[in-house]
Amino acid sequence: MPKEPLIRSEDQQDTYREERLVWSLRPRTLAEYIGQLAVAESLSVAITAARKRGEPLEHILLHSPPGLGKTTLAHIIATEMQTKITHTSGPALEKPVDIVGILSNLETGEILFIDEIHRLSHTVEEYLYSAMEDFEVSFIYGKGAFAKTLPYQLKRFTLIGATTRAGLLTPPLRDRFGMTYHLDYYSSEELVQVVNRSASILGVRIEEEAGALEIAMRSRGTPRVANRLLRRVRDYAEVKREGKITQEIADEALTREGVDKNGLDRLDSLYLRTIIDNYRGGPVGIEALAATLNEETTTLIDVVEPFLLKMGFIIRTPAGRKIGDAARAHLTSEQQRLL
Ligand code: ADP
Image (cartoon, rainbow, N blue to C red; front, top):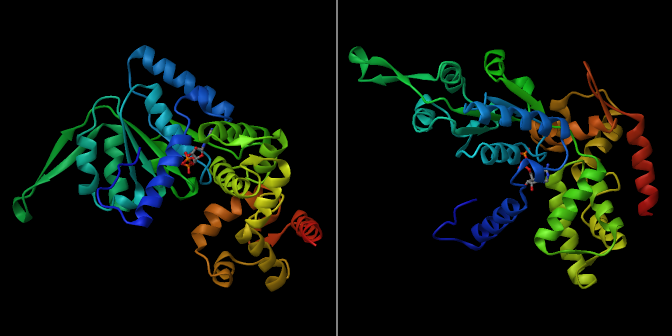
């Protein structure tokens, strides 16, 4: 749970409220975790076995596009192992000194969660190798000619790394994880469960099952998006229909938000239109596309493209990105729908 800052501006208050809301929607146990059945099953076996032996879990790598539940799962693993979790992220760890304190404070079996682990600096990554493998790090005492390196034994901890880009991890780091799991996009049925669960926590009234399905189908296969769209639809329903969510209200609210029937948002649609209109359907290199869209390359690669690839809306070729036939058909049907 995020700590409440002592002095807060309006903006900070909003961010704090939003963060609390996100935390309140997080499932706390494997039983509450919706979907990803194969991953949940495998983790449940590993957790039960580790607890029976009274041993810490092996290091775990979780990879998926953003918002599919990596952080949630890391916290669930800590709960199920009845242990503490320390949360940090790749960009926050620049030098070995940034991580040595964290590592040496970990007790046996505790979990260190490193989000965006592909963004660790090279030196920190190398420093982690022996910490992960031999539970040992080196401390440097003194300076210059008098500097001494002393080995320091760590307790047996579990590292959980999360990444949106498993391909960017170096083989030595990847090989040090005993278990690696990929989380896939959720089905509409699973997202209906996410929407209904969150609605009941937030005290939102969904009048028709079709209302939950409408939100689910437009959530890009992603629970974080489903929760965000639910909040937008709730706002709209409160203003227009005394808070009751129906399919019609969900459709109206999401269309106003610029979310189309397949869950594509404005950036997704613009991305596809740019390839069609500016590059005759491609192939086009990612750098050129990012420059035309005035977007970060990483946003396109991490957030926009995985879902479009999954839908068959784009194809990746050695020469660059090409538009898929399904995308043209989808954009035409959306145009007709909005006429
Ligand atoms: P990631 O770390 O992969 O970006 P998070 O774990 O932060 O994703 O998940 C984003 C939000 O989606 C969480 O706040 C949680 O409410 C919801 N969520 C994710 N996975 C699930 C799930 N399997 N069941 C229910 N809600 C989920």
